[in-house]
Amino acid sequence: MKKAITIVLLVLTISPLSAQNKKKGILFDSNKLINRFHTIDELQDLNKGALIDLYLERTREIFVVLPYLSLSNKPGTSLGDIGIKEDSDNIKIVEKNNEIADRAFVYTTNTIKELVPYSDTDKIIWAILYFEEMIKKMRLGKDGNI
Image 1 (cartoon, rainbow, N blue to C red):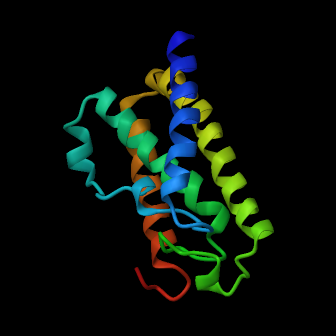
Image 2 (cartoon, rainbow, N blue to C red):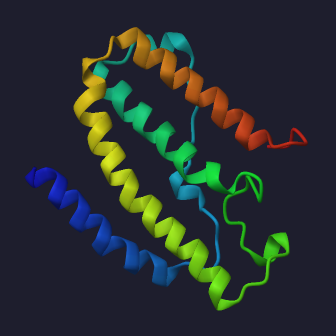
Protein backbone atom coordinates (compact mmCIF):
# COMPACT_ATOMS: atom_id res chain seq x y z
CA MET A 1 0.00 0.00 0.00
CA LYS A 2 2.83 2.42 0.86
CA LYS A 3 4.43 1.61 -2.48
CA ALA A 4 1.22 2.48 -4.35
CA ILE A 5 0.86 5.77 -2.49
CA THR A 6 4.49 6.63 -3.22
CA ILE A 7 4.00 5.94 -6.94
CA VAL A 8 0.84 8.05 -7.08
CA LEU A 9 2.54 10.95 -5.29
CA LEU A 10 5.55 10.70 -7.57
CA VAL A 11 3.39 10.81 -10.71
CA LEU A 12 1.36 13.72 -9.38
CA THR A 13 4.56 15.61 -8.54
CA ILE A 14 6.34 14.91 -11.82
CA SER A 15 3.36 15.41 -14.16
CA PRO A 16 2.97 19.18 -13.57
CA LEU A 17 6.73 19.70 -13.82
CA SER A 18 7.02 17.84 -17.09
CA ALA A 19 3.91 19.56 -18.46
CA GLN A 20 5.60 22.93 -17.98
CA ASN A 21 8.51 21.86 -20.19
CA LYS A 22 6.36 20.42 -22.99
CA LYS A 23 4.99 22.15 -26.02
CA LYS A 24 1.27 22.67 -25.53
CA GLY A 25 -1.19 20.42 -27.33
CA ILE A 26 1.16 17.46 -27.96
CA LEU A 27 -0.87 14.27 -28.20
CA PHE A 28 1.91 12.00 -26.90
CA ASP A 29 5.68 12.00 -26.94
CA SER A 30 8.30 9.38 -27.67
CA ASN A 31 9.38 8.87 -24.05
CA LYS A 32 6.29 6.71 -23.54
CA LEU A 33 7.06 4.45 -26.49
CA ILE A 34 9.11 1.27 -26.52
CA ASN A 35 12.37 1.31 -28.40
CA ARG A 36 12.87 -2.39 -29.10
CA PHE A 37 10.94 -5.43 -30.28
CA HIS A 38 11.81 -8.98 -29.25
CA THR A 39 11.89 -12.49 -30.66
CA ILE A 40 10.36 -15.40 -28.82
CA ASP A 41 13.85 -16.81 -28.19
CA GLU A 42 14.97 -13.56 -26.52
CA LEU A 43 11.89 -13.54 -24.33
CA GLN A 44 12.30 -17.17 -23.31
CA ASP A 45 15.77 -16.33 -21.98
CA LEU A 46 14.36 -13.69 -19.56
CA ASN A 47 13.10 -14.24 -16.05
CA LYS A 48 9.52 -13.49 -15.10
CA GLY A 49 10.38 -10.13 -13.51
CA ALA A 50 12.03 -8.86 -16.71
CA LEU A 51 9.09 -10.16 -18.74
CA ILE A 52 6.63 -8.28 -16.53
CA ASP A 53 8.62 -5.08 -17.05
CA LEU A 54 8.41 -5.56 -20.84
CA TYR A 55 4.70 -6.36 -20.52
CA LEU A 56 4.21 -3.09 -18.65
CA GLU A 57 6.13 -1.00 -21.18
CA ARG A 58 4.10 -2.39 -24.07
CA THR A 59 0.83 -1.90 -22.20
CA ARG A 60 1.81 1.71 -21.59
CA GLU A 61 2.45 2.47 -25.27
CA ILE A 62 -0.88 0.97 -26.30
CA PHE A 63 -2.61 2.80 -23.43
CA VAL A 64 -1.08 6.15 -24.46
CA VAL A 65 -1.33 5.98 -28.26
CA LEU A 66 -4.66 4.22 -28.81
CA PRO A 67 -6.97 7.15 -27.96
CA TYR A 68 -5.18 9.31 -30.54
CA LEU A 69 -4.68 6.69 -33.24
CA SER A 70 -7.27 8.15 -35.61
CA LEU A 71 -5.55 11.54 -35.34
CA SER A 72 -1.89 10.54 -35.51
CA ASN A 73 0.43 7.65 -34.79
CA LYS A 74 3.53 9.87 -34.64
CA PRO A 75 5.01 11.00 -31.31
CA GLY A 76 5.36 14.75 -30.87
CA THR A 77 2.36 15.54 -33.06
CA SER A 78 0.58 18.68 -31.95
CA LEU A 79 -3.01 19.70 -32.55
CA GLY A 80 -1.82 22.28 -35.08
CA ASP A 81 0.12 19.62 -36.99
CA ILE A 82 -3.13 17.80 -37.74
CA GLY A 83 -5.19 20.89 -38.46
CA ILE A 84 -6.95 21.23 -35.11
CA LYS A 85 -7.11 24.73 -33.71
CA GLU A 86 -4.70 25.11 -30.79
CA ASP A 87 -7.01 27.16 -28.63
CA SER A 88 -7.16 26.91 -24.86
CA ASP A 89 -10.17 24.56 -24.90
CA ASN A 90 -8.56 22.01 -27.22
CA ILE A 91 -5.23 22.19 -25.41
CA LYS A 92 -7.03 21.63 -22.08
CA ILE A 93 -8.76 18.56 -23.55
CA VAL A 94 -5.44 17.00 -24.58
CA GLU A 95 -3.67 17.93 -21.35
CA LYS A 96 -6.53 16.64 -19.20
CA ASN A 97 -6.68 13.37 -21.13
CA ASN A 98 -2.92 12.89 -20.79
CA GLU A 99 -3.03 13.70 -17.07
CA ILE A 100 -5.88 11.25 -16.48
CA ALA A 101 -4.14 8.59 -18.57
CA ASP A 102 -0.95 9.00 -16.51
CA ARG A 103 -2.88 8.63 -13.26
CA ALA A 104 -4.89 5.68 -14.56
CA PHE A 105 -1.73 3.96 -15.71
CA VAL A 106 -0.43 4.02 -12.13
CA TYR A 107 -3.37 1.79 -11.20
CA THR A 108 -2.85 -0.38 -14.26
CA THR A 109 0.80 -0.77 -13.25
CA ASN A 110 -0.21 -1.85 -9.76
CA THR A 111 -2.68 -4.37 -11.16
CA ILE A 112 -0.11 -5.82 -13.55
CA LYS A 113 2.59 -6.03 -10.88
CA GLU A 114 0.23 -7.73 -8.45
CA LEU A 115 -1.60 -10.15 -10.74
CA VAL A 116 0.53 -10.94 -13.81
CA PRO A 117 3.19 -12.77 -11.75
CA TYR A 118 0.59 -15.50 -11.27
CA SER A 119 0.45 -16.04 -15.05
CA ASP A 120 2.34 -18.80 -16.76
CA THR A 121 5.58 -17.49 -18.24
CA ASP A 122 4.53 -18.73 -21.68
CA LYS A 123 1.33 -16.65 -21.50
CA ILE A 124 3.28 -13.54 -20.54
CA ILE A 125 5.61 -14.12 -23.51
CA TRP A 126 2.61 -14.61 -25.81
CA ALA A 127 1.05 -11.37 -24.53
CA ILE A 128 4.29 -9.41 -25.04
CA LEU A 129 4.60 -10.70 -28.61
CA TYR A 130 0.93 -9.87 -29.23
CA PHE A 131 1.35 -6.35 -27.83
CA GLU A 132 4.45 -5.84 -29.98
CA GLU A 133 2.51 -6.83 -33.10
CA MET A 134 -0.21 -4.34 -32.14
CA ILE A 135 2.39 -1.62 -31.62
CA LYS A 136 4.00 -2.37 -34.99
CA LYS A 137 0.60 -2.05 -36.67
CA MET A 138 -0.18 1.16 -34.79
CA ARG A 139 3.16 2.63 -35.86
CA LEU A 140 2.66 1.59 -39.49
CA GLY A 141 -0.58 3.50 -39.66
CA LYS A 142 -3.15 3.26 -42.40
CA ASP A 143 -0.64 3.92 -45.18
CA GLY A 144 1.95 1.45 -43.90
CA ASN A 145 4.52 4.10 -42.99
CA ILE A 146 6.50 3.84 -39.77
